[in-house]
Image (cartoon, rainbow, N blue to C red; front, side, top):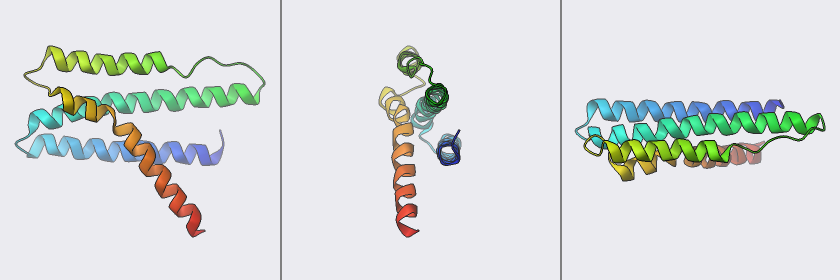
Length: 126
């Protein structure tokens, strides 16, 4: 795996862990526990989806370097995980807020965009 790709993966995972820590603090120390627990549910599934996507991309890159074909990126698995989070939120609506779960599911995309912008800014500084 190329060094730059590995560094990108590490930075994205750090950002997600920092965000998860902030959400846990929000759930523990604010009066908006339902919202923060819903964000946490969505963000944990989102973090799992990020890990799964990075793993599949790594396998696809290895297969390409060895002139092999590879399977898909696991889109169905990621959709199924997101669907599970939505079903949990619907089943236990007294404990979870559906919109907050959906926002939590989108955190990976925000982290990817932030990491991209920081890396572009850092590249222009060099």
